[in-house]
Length: 144
Picture 1 (cartoon, rainbow, N blue to C red):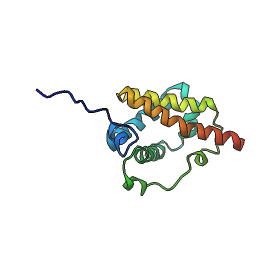
Picture 2: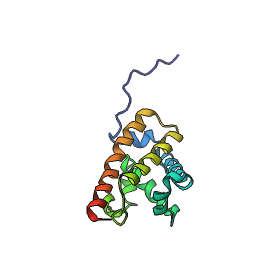
Picture 3: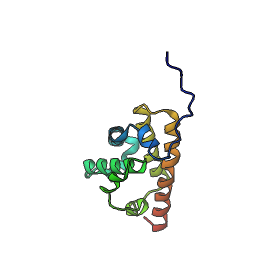
């Protein structure tokens, strides 16, 4: 009978641990699809959906590639992505704390719906807050 592992849980954010915990590229794609499905169907997210609904397939592909790379998915993914500044890409929008929180709530729902462990969800929500807040600050300082 196999013994339970006494190894500590993986430290997210180290090499590809987060990418693996998300289920690799298929898992990230599933997360992004669930995220956009919530955004599209839940009226709580109408504002942020209105910013993403003109070309949802492209938006899903871009977020999938970005999250694959961001979570440690490898350099081959970076080759498919042009260098970007997350705040600059969103600078044309009026992102307040309300829209930041909509995005974060939508992502948390997607993580929960995809059955990720609470430790991973907690880690990712802390990490997602950082760029979301930078976007808000950047949009505020731009007067968007």
